[in-house]
Length: 247
Image (cartoon, rainbow, N blue to C red; front, side):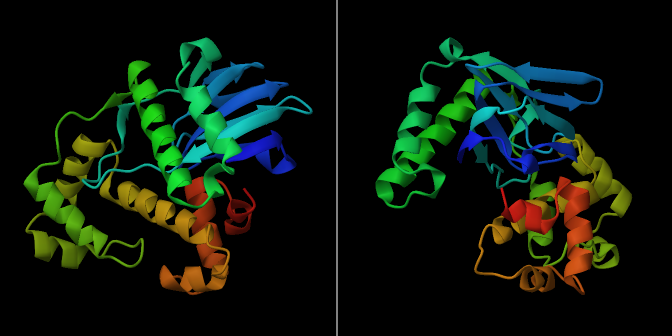
């Protein structure tokens, strides 16, 4: 959670954030460009940005934001939402959300400790998801089928973002092509792309722990050195591991 002037590190090109973001523009303006489309938020407006959206983000000089990032995933491997586009909303369109976020900020923000702060953060997350569904972000109605669920359990045991296809095919009884078709139908991603995103989320969580060195995190993900890990992470998010830590 951040409340203040947009730093230079906020101006990004071809950025892909693994977290869902919402920004309340307090002064200046915020604009994102994604493909041939763009969204712009003026003072008093909220901009909600889906996770993994490849975008450029720009701000007017001296723009001030209240910003919150929310990591969100489902146990069955599906993305939280099936259809999602960036949204710009006025304060009066989400009267229940802003007071919850302000209360969390007064309690110390997302880094606040204690059961009370955790309960406030949970309330914010629940209100966030509810308002997005009301605004047209469609969640998945059906659970993953049993075959895919078991295969996801196999993938969850992997310690690196590389897919050992011969072993996976032997253990599951299906070919890579069959699993790619299954994943594409269920998640909109290939098996490889789905796994990269899952590991990128895990890497972002590890990088938020400043007690762990980037070299140690790289080793735990199966990379030979920090440079290889940094190249992989930049491909996933558009940021280096050090930039991720500076958020």
